[in-house]
Amino acid sequence: MPSPSAPASRHLRLWWRRRGRGGAVAATFAVALLAAALLLSLSYYASLPLTPASGPRSSALVGLTLLRRAEEKGALCLDGSAPGYHLQKGSGAGSQSWLIHLEGGGWCRNLKSCASRQKSILGSSRYMESQVEFAGMLSDDQDRNPDFYNWNKVKIRYCDGASFSGNVKEEFQNGTKFFFRGQRIWEAVMDELLLKGLRHAKQAFLTGCSAGGLATFIHCDDFHALLPKDSRVKCLSDGGFFLDVEDISKQRTLRAFYSDVVRLQDLKKRFLHCSSSMDPGQCLFPREVVKDIRTPVFILNPAYDAWQVQHVLAPVASDPQRSWLDCKLDISKCSPNQLEILQGFRKELHDAISEVKQKKDWGIFIDSCFIHCQSLNSFTWHSPSSPRVNNKTIAEAVGDWFFDRREVKELDCEYPCNPTCHNLVFAKPFKG
Image (cartoon, rainbow, N blue to C red; front, side):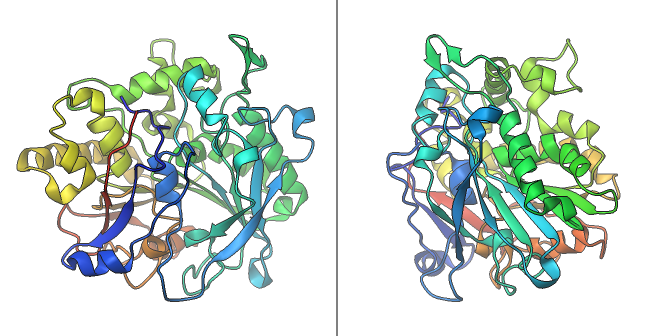
């Protein structure tokens, strides 16, 4: 199967296409995602903010801060470098409100794939950009981000390969140094942010995309416990509700992958919901993790998650004849039989969140788009051309839920019913 951390640079071009508008809008919003020679997954690319050639002012660039005394704390990236984060201070009425975002970027299942990540931004701060753009729900533009624009906002970089969860004391694996310290990174960065004002937060919002969205489920209650008891504290997982489903060859590809991650970084002890009878990989799936969460969470997910369609439902190893290739590149090219399978995948998601639907204080926004993460993209988060469900943008739905303006359970109809969707189109598939 292609690894969820498979090389994507030089192999991927993404552009947005609005159904019914064809090439005109595609040409207008075409964006080249340049990250040559870096190991990046779809989850990372889909979380990158895309900016049109013209329009409102560009989003702010925010500098990288490396964790202080990282080695002393044992909080290190895969290669032993210090982890980092980007902090933009809030202002005015938002000065005591905090939004924390956990970056995504797949996982590594074995020493070989983790060694590759050591030489990339997903395993070493030595390769991280000195500045990143804050867009979508991290934007400081009130028009683009009406509810959170003036908050303190933090993007925590992802460099441990296991959704900020590993805590292996040993440094050497087969004679090579690896640091599986995601849990320590989480704790150390939180401690540093508490000293920078997070401990006084009146409102706090933990969010994450893809592997970071999974980390949001994992750490949501821990985050809540750090903050004052009278604070409003909630969490949001964007594109992080991964499904434990059979692929097109009846194999549970992602469960097998997760099992390798759990064994490699000794994660099973991290999850209290894991019984001895469970396959190790089952411990990481959100359907299991959410059973123990007490803090309100918002689940933002596309029903036809592009990353999961490529890596979970129709991975290369399960499609030797490449009959799914066109469908995985462009949902509009799926055959009637493939669309029927995709509708079954959508039903699996709805079944997996069935208990969440009954939780009054939890929020849901499931659109019928072929995309992955949507909260850090200016187009999909909040713009005149944003996808809508029940005439609400994602930003409007999330804001309504966070501030208790209404109960939010937005569940879209089946593809291709929603003309507001921005569906990803790929020029080439990922390589393993």
